[in-house]
Image (cartoon, rainbow, N blue to C red; front, side):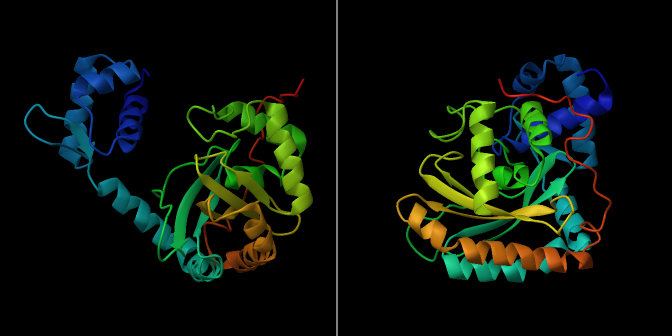
Length: 273
């Protein structure tokens, strides 16, 4: 990282992954930036209200200013207003966590959720993170809407999620990813068993108008002990129906009405051997 803007964004992205904060030295080492430069950038971020220090010479962590900006943006796009009633309905039907992810360029980001579980095990991840498309149900649902070459190029750009960082059944190669993509196309929704998180099963359907690129995905996730393949298949029709309803209502959101290019446009084509 050489440019001031690139380094500043790198610091913000790194701190977003560490809720307890990081020391200056750790930030400099992980981003490979001189400590003197990191100190100057952190001072500017503190002055502008995006970062604070836990104590004198202590760890640096994000403030809620970025969160506030993100929530403000979402409130003005109309995404959550349109999607939340549908997410709530699907959460009530399934009794599990339901999430909406939206496509933004080459990224698939979770932006809204509804929790259906009222007791027992609950899976409740933080919003705002990007899905690893090679091993998440949301990512596979998105890839299923693309031609094979485009899907392969996008996975190759992001990389295949390693098993040690994700679930024990995460695909290890491009070929394995594409087998799951093909199964998703045939089924109409993805179905993953401990590919993204150990002990978690999930399913997702693309939110897509006919003949148009996908706008996003709707997913259902729950502990594998109760969210079994049989239970997931029984919910398939409801999931696909709610995704279609959201696609039909998407015209009311300025975000969804933006012109959308092919997510893999300009990426080098990668062919599975």
